[in-house]
Length: 185
Image (cartoon, rainbow, N blue to C red):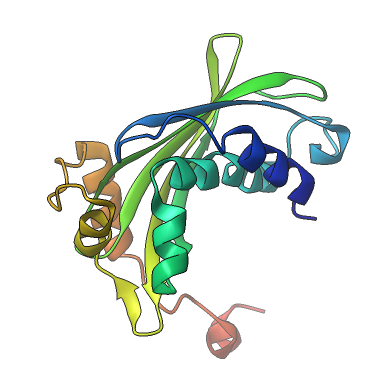
C-alpha cells in the first residue's frame, strides 16, 4: 500500500520550507516501520523505491515545480532507475534521505537519492524521470524555463552518462511470451 499518510505528513512538514534551486538538495528524516520490512526483517527493496517518493515529491514542491505541473496540466513519471543497496535499514531505524536533481538531457531529468543511517550510506538510486503532457514528453529545457531557471543542464557526471548510454543498448521490447517457445524444455 502506498504510504499516503507519510506522504501527506512530508508535504505538510515542508510546505513553508525555504525554496530550493533546481540543483539544491532536499534533506528529510524518516523512520522504518514494521510494515516496510521484508521477511528478513529489513527495509524491503521495493518499499525503498516507494519511500524515495517521500523525498522526490517534496523536492518538486520546494523547487516550485508542483504549481507549474498543475497550471499546465503536466504530470511527472519515473522512466527508469538504477538502485544500489549497501547497508541494511531495520525496523524503527531512523534514516536521512537526500534528494537532488543532477541535470537533464533533451528528454529526461536525472535525480540522485540516497538513504543514510549513522553517517553510512545504506542505498542510492539514480532516477530518470519525465515531465509529461497530453502531447507526450515535455522537454526539460521547457520545464526549466517555466521555473525561471537557465535551460542548459550542467554536465552530467560520467557515471550517469555511462548509464544513459548502456540503457540505450538495452533491447525493447524485452524478451517476452512470444519468444518463450524458444526456451529449452
